[in-house]
Length: 356
Ligand SMILES: Cc1ncc(COP(=O)(O)O)c(C=O)c1O
Image (cartoon, rainbow, N blue to C red; front, top):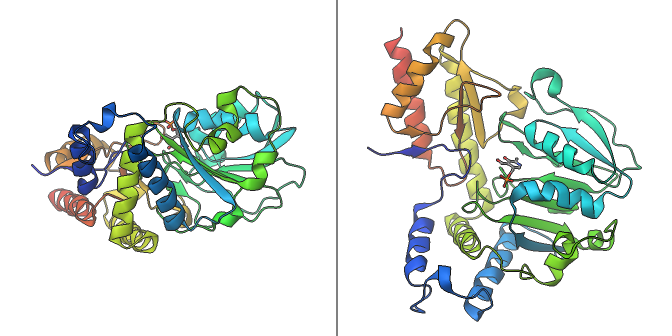
């Protein structure tokens, strides 16, 4: 049976990328060696790394005064790397769910945290708007896409202080104005690669703002100065990331991917709104194009387990909602094909027919 992969992360990657990765594991670039057993300090791997950086820059339109590096440890490591480097006295955090709460907890090890806005009052089902950003913050931190709740910022934030964003689950899914950010980072295991590597995009002026003496691996300058090679980088995930970026470029670039993502999200949200058995869980204007959350509509809650089985029998994988929201979550990352969303919509329609 054909499987439709809606996993929240690690998640679907393009077939051509998986094929290239499988080949490279056996024979990397015709070297007769596996990608998994070459030194990272070879011209071949250096080319992969440089390609990955250049493609990232090209696809996301990253200006010249920014550096990009790749590092292990996951996005959760950045939760403390960011404040260790940039929190001198006080930072502002927008609290939009689990991932910002975790980031706030880590930031408090380094200084004062002011939660400048929060959507906790409604179980993080919306993006806070219309709040003031104090001018005395070292930086303002937010999470651009809330993977668990399915809310997403549709606009870059205008801020009088440097903006730092976690884009783990929507990087390269929509065009952004990079120049509005001081730092953009994320785990790559949703839109770009398997687990094991994070990307960090940092504006040059921030490199001079490191707030305290730090262990070498924690200092942002270490990774910039050594071009992601201070220690052994995650060779395999970086290779896959490079292949994914090549795929994106071949598909037509970020605008094409963005339009496809919008199309998929509209199809699924339209069905959630139309289908009498389901309802969405977030404010309509803040709906994520990446993580689409829905539950059974009022009075139909008892059908949840049956729908899960029904969908599973039709090849849907990974649509169980996070326990904090319940119901269902279809993660429709860049590599999720339109057909997968069509199949899920058809499944929801068939289920509704059965229960008429
Ligand atoms: C938005 C967001 N930030 C951070 C994380 C944590 O990432 P990692 O598991 O790479 O530490 C996740 C994981 O799903 C996430 O979705």
